[in-house]
Length: 329
Image 1 (cartoon, helix red, strand yellow):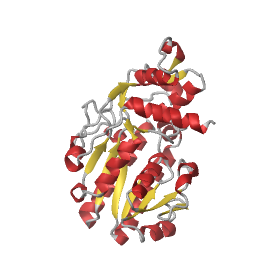
Image 2 (cartoon, rainbow, N blue to C red):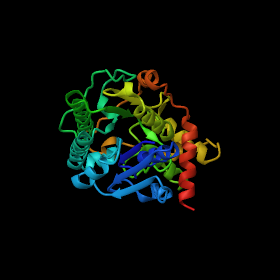
Image 3 (tube, rainbow, N blue to C red):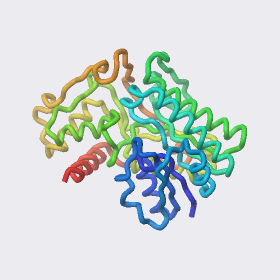
């Protein structure tokens, strides 16, 4: 059994990863300051003999050092997340991501712990070379636009992690997540699917930003954490970067249509009248830039550990709908 530490473990993805690791027989410790995570996400794990948690920031060097000294593998998920939060709090975004990753890597080096660093599809920026492969060039917008601060900060995280591997021999794996979705994800920070589901269940119009023609690939969180855990067990993955995402490309407008159909028991009549288009400038900020397509090439991770996503989008949407229906009862 492996002793694991998950930073940001009370978050959406971290809590699902904790469940998977516990089910696989590992010891799991999480550290989370609950700034975007929630105790509700891990309440059902409290009391498990192989689970413990610390409510603290990874910026607390003494606490982090103590936790890292007792683990073999670190899953570093703690980060500023969500476009809305990133646009509104750029200083917090940069400091949380870069300084937090530096603190984790320094602690890991002291105890030679393996580190899996969460990155994001945002690092590909405005590149039009679709699907995105890990070796592709990236194209970011100007520094005057806040949204690119997140992409740049996660790129620095990747550079730093890989530098620790090359210079110090620290076992590091970087994984880039593409639109991970599922139960427990909040719409508070701009995540589109939980927002759509909550609006549909409340009988409110679904707010689609832009014209809705932009496409994304939504990966179920259960598939994503299976990929992350698989990369942790692979010696060949060390020192490399991997995309983790679905290749089922769908427009945001179609996600809205599917959400309404599932909430309304298959009834699709008049679905367009239940959607409100909101300009990007109104939703985020003047000059906000979005990408028309964002599709991952997952050939590398498939070749490394044989991973492919298995849960289709409609099943994921149904899971999210049931989660929010249960949470309002």
